[in-house]
Image (tube, rainbow, N blue to C red):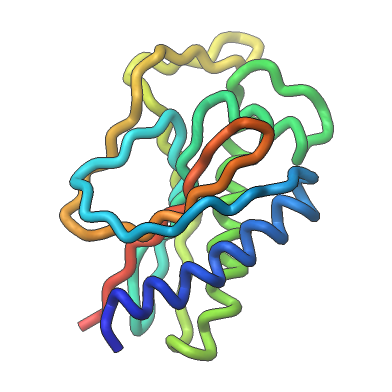
Amino acid sequence: MELKEVAEDISKDIVSVTKTLFETMIMLDLKFNSATLTTETHIKSDVAAMVSFMGKYHGIVGLFCSEKFSLKIASSMLMEEMPDFTSEVVDAVGELSNMIAGNVKTIITDNYGEMELSIPMILVANDKTREDDNGKLTLTNSKLCCFTNDPWLFANFTTENEDFDIGLMIKESV
């Protein structure tokens, strides 16, 4: 099967899983905007939470969002207002990316074989992050740039006037 067909097929599962998780766990209604296969060499974001997978196919499922949106995710998951970017926000965004990847893995295992997932890796846009005595992380206004030579499939969503992407980079293992 062609890589483009695999990515397009899996994108439907990503959209379904993401909408379900947001509506049931995050309590936010999502609008799915589009899915596009891009060969851009870099991805700009404030926060990127990525989970890799290995099996017949290998790659990465990533959540790419603004700092503001990561605060919304954490506030909803933790059921308390998270006004500052703390380690709890990092954990919540990582857990959400892990849930999306895990649910996608469960759905696609039948068609593409068993896959193993990594633990989530969370990247935050700046080189001056520091944690104060209260656990608050201080961020600059820089953007994270992820560089890649491989195409990504991006499913773009909107909720509460915030856009975010779930990305998939996938390759057939050799």
